[in-house]
Image (tube, rainbow, N blue to C red; front, side):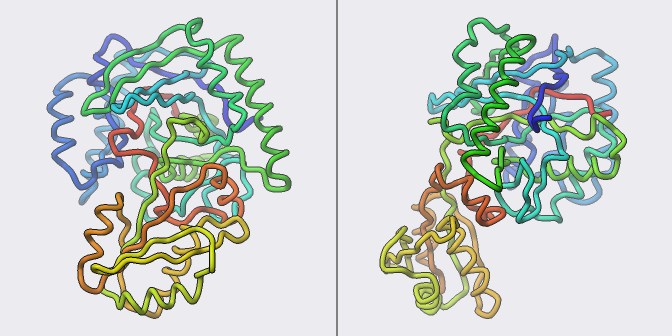
Length: 401
């Protein structure tokens, strides 16, 4: 079976979708005021807020909160808050505040064909290194849950645009499921039902895509890469391995998006190294990985700035080459690495004594999947898929018990 499949998808009915849909739990972790505003907006209305545990609240013993979440899931099911759309996909268009429209398809993935460990040969792979310590709390939430809701964004390498675009071209003939404004600056979201013959046509497109990937990456084809929410998907895999007899637990709901869509913006995450000898680090880095030409890496030390070059060998991305050097260097030299969004912020932080800032180049989409194949997983903090408000909001659900 293809690893991305149709699912029995649940959508809330007879409720305010604006209050139902809230952003991914791993956003705004350091901004508890964001989540307080969400709580004020939701008030006593049925909401996905009551079915998740924001990471901003992950302090101390969460047992009581998790039990309440599980009980609320059962109550929502008993109260028939959900309508079931069997054996289908949902075609999604998300209009961001910039006006950009990001397209996707909601379906489920086979967790037996997903592996987040480095050097995996699975059809579905992680993009970045998975932090094992972040998995158990998520497993605690999912282990006894009756429902799952996705904030996982799965990426395909569909240069020919035979998958998601095939649905967008005929959305006028698909039943509209929802169309509303997301809270807290999330933009607008619309979804259309893909069932029956339309779902079969998409299944056929998935098979053509798999054939294209097998030709493109001979010997080590990766079909999909987890662009966002890898730790949540890893937790789903962990719970499935605990309970392999449960057919529903074998699958997880995700949204599939195309890396080659113009709306997909991969913003680089820059590096600063604090509490170090910046000039010694720079000299060691230029000696170890510097080349006469290649991809430029701009550095800042106080008022100084310059550039050196790295060459992407064996498919490794430039950010991976730099990160591998920093990891090795920090084993024997003083320093603390921090990961910064935005060039201006990186330059400003580089003004602090004992600090060097390194501006990472953008991730090239055409090299993205090849980088995963060459390096197993990409180095941590390789890229960011848009801003926090642009992350996925919870909306669709699926029964897992």
